Image (cartoon, rainbow, N blue to C red; front, side, top):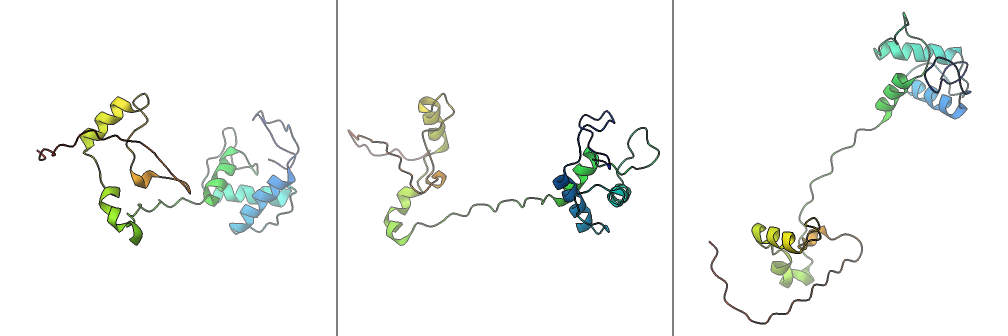
Length: 165
């Protein structure tokens, strides 16, 4: 982006006219950073001077072949502007366990039951889809307004469990 237009392929020849919306966005960003410039959408000498000063203030490297900064908005300038105006995402808080509602208190033990890790791994390896899709799901992994997983189980006999090792 220059006073004459935009160099699409970096060959230092203006290929397209400047997009007034893009020019106004650069001007608005510079104004928000404290430069004396209006967001007119026209890349004029004032804009070129503000871009040059922005490059100096940000200690951007002078492009190869130039003795000093120019007023061109290229990838380095637009990249720095984007970096300054892109909010840094805050890390998501760790999910906190939610106790079951009072109506489910009687089921709390069953809901929170976890099979031993070795058993989960063996079942997932044997019955998972190509070993990647688990067959054992934690209830906390349920998503959406309705989640119904139905796995019928037929118990043919019941034996006492062996004590854990």
